[in-house]
Image (cartoon, rainbow, N blue to C red; front, side):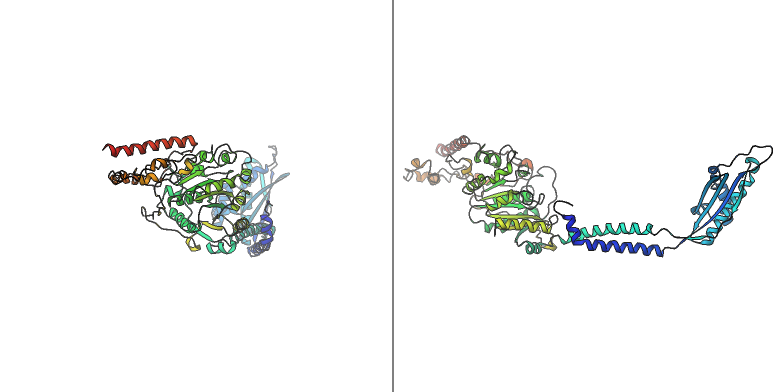
Length: 558
């Protein structure tokens, strides 16, 4: 019996079925024993002994030798010719045994479904052996005699236990296997509507079960690896269903009952989909025991969530680029003892509050709910919880339990994502044509990365050269915190021609060149960029200021 009592529950629920199947197959075996035709056996016995003569020394017959002579081709070939049957047919029911005692007693036993045939063949073989042995008496000095002719064939039946024991064993085995199948079928989810009915959790979207990819770019999320596929479109569908619920900065926890149900894959693709739509997204791997996001985005675990919670590194030092603009990834961090307790210590709450003030959506990849308690604590501090459930692998009991656990700590904030639901059971399988996948509608700045506040929290950076193409007074007045005094005398008539001349260089085409495109291979991921410190931000600010100054001097020289 296992710790969760599965064998005991199986016996309590299906014990009657197991007994019924066992009894039925045992009864069938008994009926088979009664229906089987009986076999008949006839027996004849011959005795060999040395022939005494005054000129020879008598030698006792060897039982083994006599047995082999009785089964030899010299004897059986003659008998098969007399009976008109093949030698192999003759030997099929023949049994010859030798018994020691003064001489050698040879017992001929023949079994057949016909009593007359059994007696006839046993008599023929015994008689031919005696004739053959006596024909060589002059050479070997041993004679044979038929002391017991073939008796009337007796009816014989196999023992009853030969039928009942295999029947009972087979019935017990089939009863257990069928009970397991019935229990498994009964404890399975019956589709999308069945899941909503038994758990009380609405289903936001269904995701097809993707095949395992190989080769370059295999670990990447499908939205980056194959953006035109039906799997990628299903994550866009999830984004469309979740979008109206994201009112203001939000925290979305992607949870699951057991490992291997697709939590990390769903979290990574959801974060990419939201970032492609223009939202500032931070993806955090909170599964510190079995992390996976650092493998998907080719990041290192040297710095991550655990390092931030222990105070070893700041948030700006650990956030890394997520292969596309508007996405930052926070890996699980270095492995250490007691990593799970860090999530419950309260530091994560402050971290999430800080991130929500600087981005639009925080996506959390949760540990398994039914394995460790970390996920329930994260659900209590999340604005939305997505319960990822594998339709084929998850049992109904596990799904109900996971949903109930989440509803207790996050009432009204739980929705579900089903993996691998076929269309006949309510699954949605989008169909897209290669190269025709609908592009996400960008919000605000489609190209410019909107995470400047995270890159340099202590330094006010000038406008990015791509985001602010013209050094006209109007754009210069936007970053008012640092160049405000220099921008004050700008309203004079002199800058007006400059602003009019500004469109002449037309730097806007530069903004179109770095169009955000999903990476299609692992090699396409940029080198993970670590936001190290304020010093790095200052260095980047100086580079951008120099670029802006050169862009401003270029039109003046012309």
